[in-house]
Image 1 (spheres, rainbow, N blue to C red):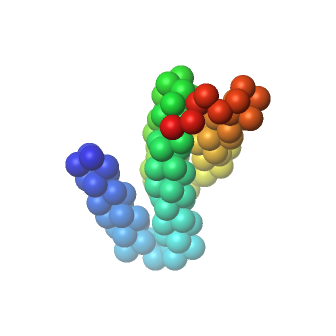
Image 2: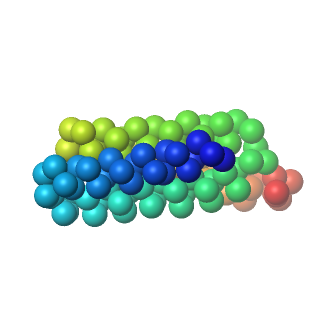
Length: 107
């Protein structure tokens, strides 16, 4: 849990330093929105997909890759929005399996 707090502080500091360096408010607001999205989808996915281990591990990897996309966006100004949708795909696949196979995957 401590690592998440440290990563959050580092990310907010990177966004702040990027804003101070380039004075680009639009980029900073997009980065804050993406970071909030990663936290929200990551946390909700950790709660819901824990019952099916393969989807849970795929969700962890997709949240980590989304975080790296955010860092890449801060450094290079290139956004790969397709990778940002991967955590939503894992949550959707969990709900699809729950719908198709029944409710034995409830947590």
